[in-house]
Image (cartoon, rainbow, N blue to C red; front, side, top):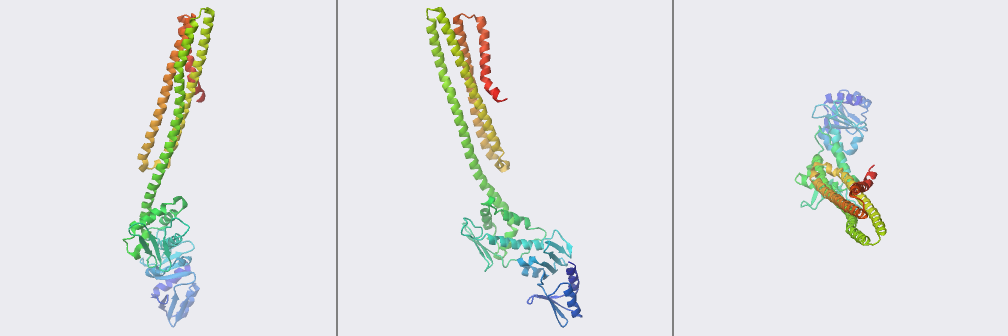
Length: 436
């Protein structure tokens, strides 16, 4: 950079003039040979002298010189950023220098981190190059750019909206942007929108182009395209999320309905088993009562006692077995409920519900959850009521038969209590055993 500093210290006091036609700056020197030699020592090779008049070509080998900012905006080209850039006269009254190796900007040869004159112009060319890659291709179902015309320096977009066609000239655009604000992050967001994970987002960005740009003067559209990009991206992202959320919501609802139906089907299967037991219960009581009546009508006491005890034993086995089955069914319901709550917890952790805008939609799933939980509660209540009825009548019936055999009431009462306790233990054994 020392050579550039020395060059400016030599040129600026000489007050050179800009020859736009020849692409040179010219000034008069009393010792032209010495000046030419000095410039060449400073690696300014494209220099000539005619008499006392010295001409310096603005396009040097590794350095592109711009006379002022107007010259910079008129002549700057994408490949210029492969060289160092120098603007001699600027609005700040000091030279601007761009080091192409580091990408750093220097104002009056002091590093300036927050001036984005050069980097924003570079981003401007990056936008154009990226849009060129999004030109219409036959093998793609969607194309962001309908036609990129390098001949006329125009980018053509089409839409089904009433505007229909939007042309953005970029050849006449003056890439003079706010130097205090970098365009880089917005450009990176714009490129990211075209990643595979955001397949439909470019459609929404294209839609926003037709909302923002048609009313802007044609020659200013490219600049507006870049300057309005943060707002267009914001709107497009919002609309894109609404689109995705609608799809996600429909998908979640569909999956949740399927899940609910599976749980209801399993509940109905369990309920069917309980209903079968419920139907069998009065039949078993009736058959046992009839058998008891027939046995007690026998004229042989020993045979009567033996048969009654056999009925008691069979009825005890039947009672304990059906109670055990009820316990299994109650445990099945408990496991089903636990699985359902786990599934709902996973659903509640879905990122869809993290956004405040989707809180209302989450209420739909919570209401559906409560309906399913009510069904579980009703089923559990039905099982417990059936258990109580079965235990009460079976215990009463067994005690009645034993009373017929001759057992006294003082033994029947503790025996009944013991039987009820044993049946309660059997009913809850399966649940207790599985939750350990």
